[in-house]
Image (cartoon, one colour):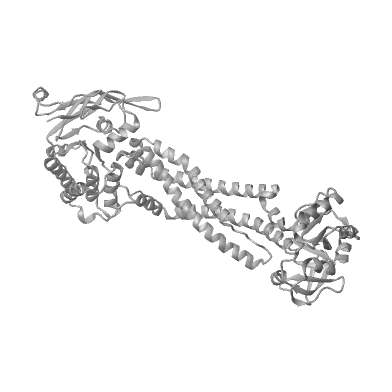
Amino acid sequence: MKTLLETADLRKTYRVGKIEIEALRGVDLRIREGELVAIMGPSGCGKSTLMHVLGAMTKPTAGKVFIDGQEISGMSDNELTGIRRDRIGFVFQKFNLLPTLTARGNIEIARYIHGQGASNRHDEHLREILQLLMIEAKMERRPSELSGGEQQRVAIARAVANKPAILLADEPTGSLDSKNSEVVLNMFRELNRRFKQTIILVTHNPELVAFTDRLIEMRDGVIVSDNDSLSWETESEMAQPARSV
Amino acid sequence: MNKQMIIAGLKARPVRTTVSILAVALEVILILVVVGLTSGISDETGRRTEGVGADILLQPPNSSLFLALSNTTMPITLRDKLRELPGIKAVSPVQTLVNSSAGLEIIYGIEPDTFNAVSNGFIWHKGRLFNTPDEVVVDDIYAKSKGVTVGDNVELVNHKFKVSGVVEHGKGARLFVSLKTAQEMTGQTGKASLFFIKLNDSDRVQTTIAEIKRLLEGYGVIPLREYAKLMMSNNMPALDAFISSVVFIALCIGVLVIFLSMYTTITERTREIGILRSLGASKKFIVTLIFQESAAVCCAGALIGIGSSFVIAKTITAVFPTLTILITADWIGKAAVFAVLSGIIGSLYPSLKAAKQDPVEALAYE
């Protein structure tokens, strides 16, 4: 499996007033294509910051980030916007659906921004996604007319509608009850298994780990453990994309 | 999809959208009605003066085009000198006075014989010419607006007059008294404010003007056929300045309202903007979206404003028949352009601010 996402000595520092907060203190990470990974840690360990940097929402203070071999750490704002548009899908804890659009509108705006026309191939993919997520009957409803679980499933559909290379989910079950959480997590697993979608779940909830193949633990801005079953030495025998710096 | 987003965005805040549209409509109404009123009054005055039927208008030196605003007069004996010029058919002296007790009304003091010779006479609706110094002839529009008819009394320039006749409008003023009465009321015995001159051959206007100018150096000599054109704002710097001021104030109102509306919009929709940015929407996309929303508001406001202007104009002229509001296609176009321009200017800062927002911060905004 090829490396899809890689970081080298990733650092991110925030300034809050006069105080500097080092949210990431040298993170080295490799994610393969098709993996379903959980990044877990207590509040304030830097996992959300890591997700924002991996998702090209913010630039690192130091270090490098590679997506499919392309370094994004030094990119301009416009270039990062393009990376988000073309390669990344986001799912947030608070769903973050546009309240003035229907479920269908929320998905279509993502496709519109991506520049998708109404081609059959993409519609077919979308139909499969909607079936999998069990939201076909809810497409004409606004977010305020949907339950939390339904909203999150619409958010997932929106995130994967353009077939992103990576799906990033920040506490995707944080606002859901246990029943809906299980439904959503099962859907992530199904997306990963059926469509080989690379998914990174960021969470502080250990129960999510059971739904993933790999667990990366963070504490105080660094990775403290990674139960990756495949060694990276084995990978050197597999095709690796050339890094473009 | 953009259209859906714009409509959804506007419908999400119906009160604010409505107020913004109405404010832009007000901007358009202000421009069209005020400009229409000033243009209408000056245009209508010009047409009525042209409607006397004379070929040339003679005024004293340093006179205003607004006939009633001139205090200067000429000796009435000039009439005899003018009659001696070749090609002159008739010369009619007029002494103007202004009644300001209820609006601004110009009164012509005329010699009926010479005035008829120049104008081919009044078209009578009712009654007859004045016979006594305290009688007045009014036009039909004045009669309708004041609700007066033959035999009624009217007060003009602190004098009581009886209406002796009602004539068709369009012959200079709306009120006519005898020249002697007007001279006595203004203390200008033996004087006239202006002369209407009729020629035997209207094609000789320019030649005759040249002769009059040679005879009376420094006097205002105007071909009456061009009088209405001269009354247009672009030939009158003061009126032009007034119109420009009104347009500028209206534009400022539009800009400020749109600015406030869009600024509060982007503040309330910070998170939405963050969501769009997280989906990969570029800064240009965000700016375009805000511009399009404000353009939609301004277009709707312009349409309502234009429609309302016609309604308001009709209402004003129904209540005040002596007023004319001239809403031209030219100014409708300009008002619409100003409305959209105010939208673009007003939404410029908010749209750029929205685009610059950090997506992470915007998503965290409560």
